[in-house]
Image 1 (spheres, helix red, strand yellow):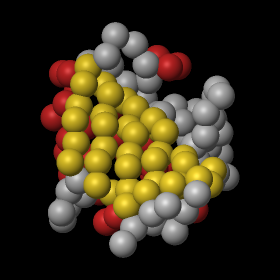
Image 2 (cartoon, rainbow, N blue to C red):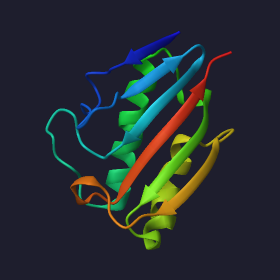
Image 3 (cartoon, rainbow, N blue to C red):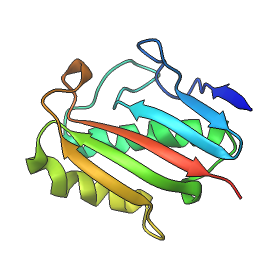
Image 4 (cartoon, rainbow, N blue to C red):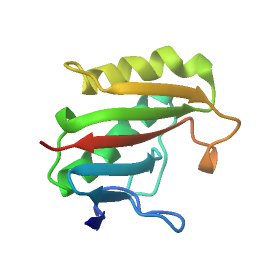
Length: 125
């Protein structure tokens, strides 16, 4: 059974996709841009953007009844791989214990000119 998950505490989808889809016990969260859902603004630094993207992921996890400890895989997209260490330092604070599997890519361009986008897969049970 598939259920669409939408959190008012994360940015609305900007295209024909859902914030997240819950299929059985697996939650698939679409790439989260570092948009503050209250203001619509994007922070400036890679550290602030990483923190906001993870905050958006956390809001969607919570909406579906999950936590960061349920996350099994993340994909991080960076506009500039030179931001890897700074992004990683912030990311490590969220996943201090039992971090999920992860890949990180540099991409040619991200929506709205942001520096980072993070998608996530979480499993319950």
